[in-house]
Length: 143
Ligand code: CA2
Image 1: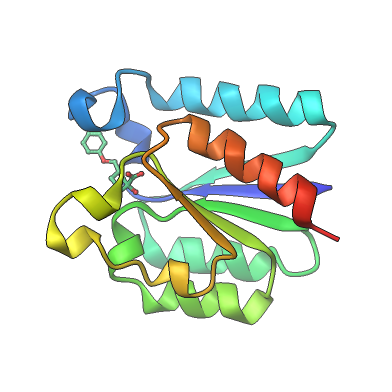
Image 2: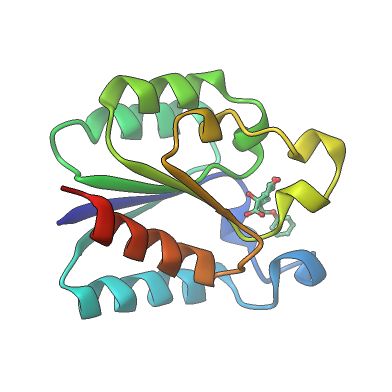
């Protein structure tokens, strides 16, 4: 199984500020944790982070026919991007959406997710563990 893990804008700054919301571990720790998990499970994984909406759209388009599943934390684009939603709908790759924080308990503008209109599952508020849960879900549910 081949998974693509996409992280959106500013997630590369994890552990720098807002530690009360996103925890104190940095982005490298997140990447290491995901790589270790996929290694243990015998899953091939590519990790991708971008601060640019169109670059994320390009990456999703290029995933067609290459990846069996996508784990995506679209970060701020969660709440704004019809383009990312449309790209996911176009490639039709099984997708799990992850948020480190519980977006349902934060500001009003974070409560709506465009990506959740396509994602098979949304995991929010479980910290970094949400990515592990997403990988497990895809492993157990991809035919
Ligand atoms: O909870 C999540 O994972 C989010 O996707 C994180 C995004 C936020 O815009 C979403 O509403 C929820 C923010 C990503 C990183 O933001 C940082 C802000 C300050 C310092 C470090 C990271």
